[in-house]
View 1 (cartoon, helix red, strand yellow):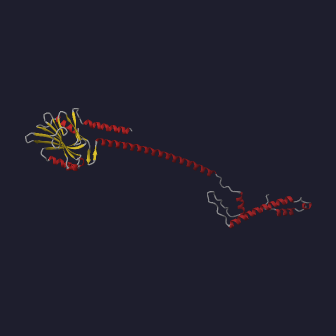
View 2 (tube, helix red, strand yellow):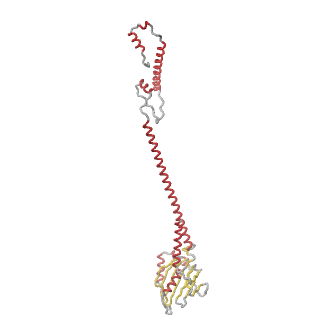
View 3 (cartoon, one colour):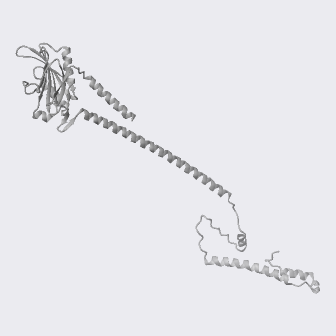
Amino acid sequence: MKFMHRAFSIILCLIVAVTCVVSVSAEDIKYNLKELKLSLYIPDSMAVKTRDNSTDLAESIYLEATNSDNSLFISVSMIKNEKTKEIYSFQNMPYSTIEEYKEQILENDGYIECKDGEYGSVPFLDFSQKYTTDAGVVIYGKQSVTLVNGMSISITSQSAGDSFTSDELNLIKNCLESIKFDTVKTSQGKGVTFWGVFLWIVVIILVLAAGLLVLSYYMGKRSTEKKKSAQREKQRKADYDVLSRAEDKQKSSAPSGYKTSSEYFEQGFDNAPAERKPSSSESEPQPLTGTEKAVRSTKKAFVHMGYFFSNLKKEIKKGKKKPTAKAGRKSKAAQKRRKSRDYDVFSDN
């Protein structure tokens, strides 16, 4: 909003500055020429004729003004024909074409020089004149010509006998700079007005301000999202590092080299290398073949048979009677032989 307020203030200052350039006195009178769609100010010290208050004006003259001693004469004329309608405006003409037009005018008698001018936001060509009438009077003149809205408009100022004084030149300049056109069209159907241009300037400023606000909003939003994404990624990496350290610690503390008693027992009956137990990470074990099942069954049978004979021996010892005298008289050699025959590899002793 501050940017828009500042821009609007600058535009108003420019408008005031442009308006102040045209020095219009309180004694000047505004004249509206409806046919030409323009207005200008003429000092009230001059006698002015227009088509509204006079009928003796020439066909192409729409305003005439003279001072009290008839030493200064100002007129506004307009010509409209098929040629002016075709060209329509100086703004449509290339620069080279305008230069050719200048040269053609300067070839006429009485035209001395030409300068570029602009009045009422419309380009003009300012010609200087000097010629002598049939009566021998020297005429000094200024003629400002423009082509606008399909019309050729000329503002002509003349001084008889002497060149223009500084006061007369200032009066002519103020009249030209006070010109205002109701509408300015560059072609048929397209008009340009002061308020139209002003409105377009305001619209462009508003659009630019809105664009800057939207751009600032999205840039801020994008920056916030990037910060949040970076924080989430940082947190995710931190959590992953903690889990990784915990898993490594758990693996290092796990016991290694542990074997069950059944594995040791099975190794005593089989010279083949012990089968590796599949780890939890491996896939499910493959089903045993017929040969592997037979070997495993044989091992289990030997184990159970050993347990059976060991238990049977214990029961027999418990059921025996006390030894007789005859048995006591047996020789030591016989006892040794009996003990040797009774020894069982499956004994618990």
